[in-house]
Amino acid sequence: MTKKHRIDVALPSMPTMKEYAEEIQSIWQTRQLTHTGPKHQQLQKELCKYLQTPNIALFANGHLALEGALEVLKLKGEVITTPFTFASTTQAIVHAGLKPVFCDIKEEDFTLDPAKIEALITPDTCAILPVHVYGNLCDHKAIAKIADKHNLKVIYDAAHAFGMSDNGLSAAVMGDVSMFSFHATKVFHTIEGGACTFKDNALNKEFAAWRQFGMYGKEDAQMPGTNAKMTEFAAAMGLCNLRHVDEEIAKRQTVAARYYQRLGGAAGITLCAAKPGVRYNYAYMPVMFDAATFGKSRDAVCGQLAAQNIFARKYFYPLTSSFSCYKGKFAIAPTPVAQKVAAQILTLPLYADLALDDVDRICDIILGKQ
Ligand SMILES: *Cc1c(COP(=O)(O)O)cnc(C)c1O
Image (cartoon, rainbow, N blue to C red):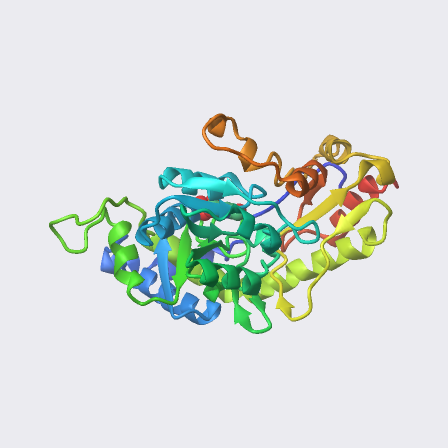
């Protein structure tokens, strides 16, 4: 067993060089490198099928896809969201000129707590932006009920939820819009890339215009837009990766199962429980360490792993609500559950090609057996 090779929290999956070379060959004939070319169109079609969504718009990355969603829905005012997420979620809200209102999460799965949403609704509230964090699907039924009652839009940050479903209902069709990230480290990737899925057909042309400088046609710009197009080379990588994604998820499941077998039941360690009827993608391996019971803090475990060249990550710490750029800008109510989770959580390495020997080594270090 090699002791010192570096292990990072994620390792991008890749097709063989030959498969990618074959996929991109036709680009030399079409000479179409971007702008909704044949690769883009094919990926769009295949993703609609895979994600079971009637519509999808592809983007240069997930963050711009999320900003696009907030813009084409023409939102104004306050957005109720979670502080327990990656910077992108909150930054998209702020960058779109909206005000984030932070709501606490549930301790069992770290998703937005529906019981705490209604108290935060004001006449200025326009939307709810929950995150299927680590692929833990939000309580979408309760959230939909609240949104319907108060006439709010629901935009899911589904960056972690590629290919997931709840009792047959795809994560791509929960809410008005769902955003997926196709960043290199995600379960499915296009190097950099992202998408919005949605039921309302009318949004197709809005998203297309928004990512093309706000231009519906060739001359006039009818709305403020940006440049967020996916290139043909990125789409080609997506076409290759999509062929292997089920196999990748199955390999991730084997790795995750080893972690559960080794760490499950240890006093002071909490793992997320699987919910019946949910199809998981095994995107992340979040573990909570209660220092008082476990005997070591999250930071201590993180440090011990790093000393062995293993780089777990403190996803998600700190809470986005405590970012220095928001200081004094928004009224931020306390979110004690999110605070506690952020202090105890560590995301362990998990990717399709992670060897089970390496998982054992990581668990031995965590459990003090090495
Ligand atoms: C990765 C990620 C994003 C942003 O996606 P990019 O494709 O990297 O722009 C947004 N939200 C969450 C929760 C993410 O993990």
